[in-house]
Length: 141
Image 1 (tube, rainbow, N blue to C red):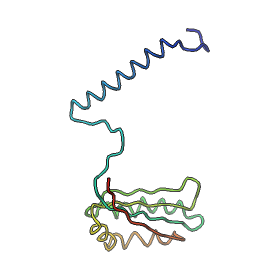
Image 2 (cartoon, helix red, strand yellow; image 1 turned 45 degrees about the horizontal axis):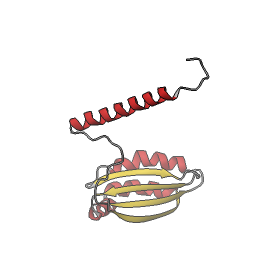
Image 3 (cartoon, one colour; image 1 turned 90 degrees about the horizontal axis):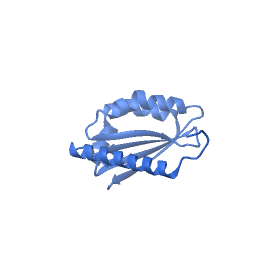
Image 4 (cartoon, rainbow, N blue to C red; image 1 turned 90 degrees about the vertical axis):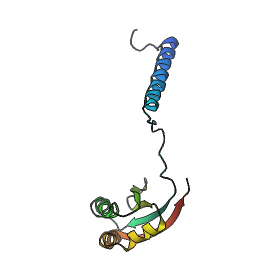
């Protein structure tokens, strides 16, 4: 087939059928092994979440990012009932961040807030924050 000429419809149709067959075959192979293809994020079920909104002081965004990885994550991941945490930065801002945490129960989340690990890590986060607010959620699905 010469360059710069459109691909015939028959070739595209055959290619599309082959790709579909391959995808269905792969899914069937995974299912046969008792595995599910991860087509979407799996929900951990019911849990509690805390979304912490942080506006950092000018020029402190990189410092918050480093603190999150070096101090906050190691402190929270050892807690009973801990499920997950993530750090988000607003796509149009260098100063607006969000830390989301998830625990199995509110009692476990509250225990984290009183833990010695939290008492060591959180003041470092507060130090770079100009404004910090939060909101709690029950994850239902």
